[in-house]
Length: 107
Image (tube, rainbow, N blue to C red; front, side):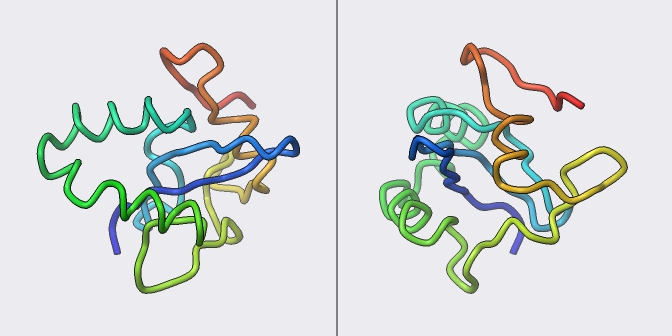
């Protein structure tokens, strides 16, 4: 599958958007708002990154990810320290962009 867009939600229902890799079973682009994710995809992948972007975002909003051949679930991820599994709330706490300029895993 490779990489896809994910949409996670915190306790307040806020949408957090990121890029997920099925190779490493973790985020490869930290969680941000939709506008920052769009900018990342455009900057990182150019025209190809924006192909069918509205449909991919809608699929992620509805199903949790833009992957077309499976329903996304964060269980089994290896996003934590020493490839440990993080819950959705832990993913949001660790990977969200607090100021919109950078992200890092906080352990």
